[in-house]
Image (cartoon, rainbow, N blue to C red; front, top):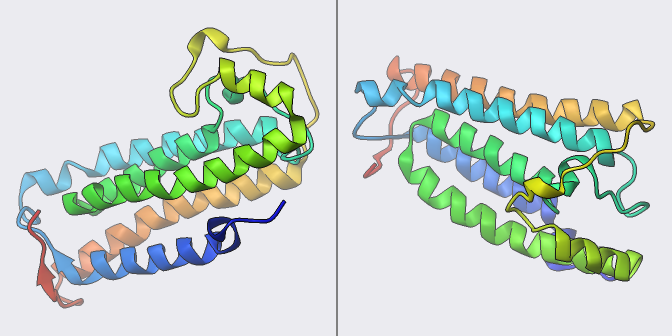
Length: 202
């Protein structure tokens, strides 16, 4: 199956988005930066990132090494068809909240949803080609992102490849690294080490 534009350049698109995100939080400020509201986002941001990371590890426990080899339909995959993206979204919102730049939420949420709409569409087309009627029946039972709690089930046991779990742990560490970077940049801006080039509306 021929890869779509988004699949071919997925890493480059993500890298570009990350660079733009970094530039925005480094050289901008907001009207509420010196208010109690500014600090109120730290704990919710951390909790969302922790939820996202734990959720991604949960997903890897079931699908690690099986992508495109076996149709995984239990564990988190019995709740959503795309739980990895759900938890990535939760982690992203946590990082964005920690920046205390509300404008980023307005931009990040629709951008993520639009971007991954194409990614999910391409992946599901491939899965349909690989697993046929089995995947179609799975799609009828389990929604894309809305959890189907009544459908939850899990195998009593299975083998897990540590290599894929370690990779997932490294990916999760990047979310916490992003939190540390955001906080460091904030302190440097407050201390006058980094200049503010523009003030955002909110």
